[in-house]
Image (cartoon, rainbow, N blue to C red; front, top):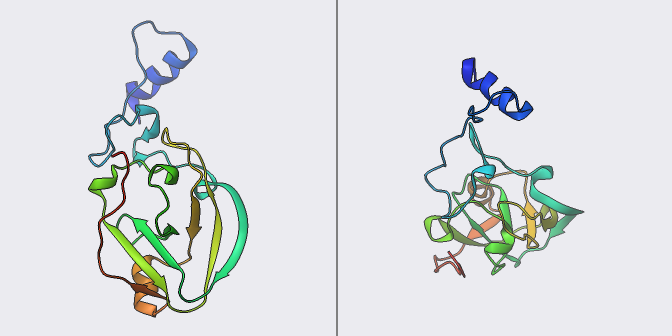
Length: 157
């Protein structure tokens, strides 16, 4: 943000210019219906601090056989236990508009685990799992096995 828009925003925050509104940012095209403008910034979504963890329980090793799932492309590195409620994951996008994948842990996998923070107008609370590598890389390395596609359990869109 630069030029007059920058100063207009500062002045509006200070109550100095009547009728000069702070700048707004366009809503990303994949935003879920009803997502408020407060969750958007110039470069896209305003993501939560601490990688979205409300509480971090620490690092654990997931044993082979554990089922995980994720919404979004395989370049991401956040998962939940298979079947965690979509709304409890506190994501900004509409469930039905996102790729959905299920994985089986195929080799012991070190992960960061905790609960999802309330964000994007959602309550959070789902178990959130973060890996160092993307889903695609973990599949390529043999740490995760992609399971056959199944419909996502979206609950409310």
